[in-house]
Image (cartoon, rainbow, N blue to C red; front, top):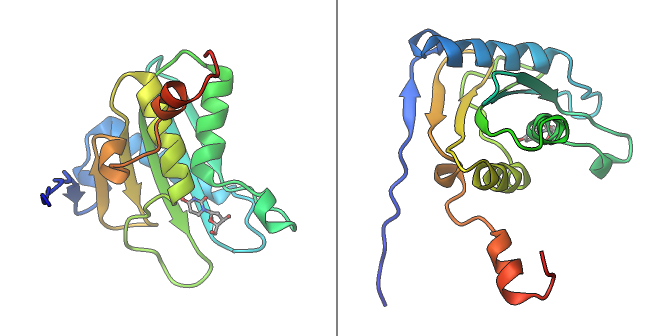
Length: 168
Ligand code: THU
């Protein structure tokens, strides 16, 4: 048996004012996107703002449905739209925020597992690191420079190509 320690590089900022301006602006867009979320069931509004290598900023928020699993998280709404509109353009960064209807969220929001998997594949296809900027409604901001930090052991398309005969 061999034990391996996987280091995780996390940057913690006291608040958004400590960020570089571009990240601060992206985070502000995410807050604005959260306001427009369709979350009548959970009352938990999530906002995401994606910055593309061509300078475009794409917004997304969670879209719920009375048939609960039919909804989609903010991160995937934003990323899928970005890839639908600009399939060849790399994602440089994504900012994620959330607000509930009880109390103020003052800790960074960390994306769900399914979103992490999608973000990881997006980063791999982009061939550049995706910076993830996370904040609640206010207060501390957590930044990671790559999805490898948030999902160190993602499921990779390589497995499919190597072990199936899909002729991609
Ligand atoms: N949600 C997101 O939009 N992103 C996440 O990373 C976690 C959860 C949404 C899904 C659902 O609409 C609500 O938050 C409560 O789970």
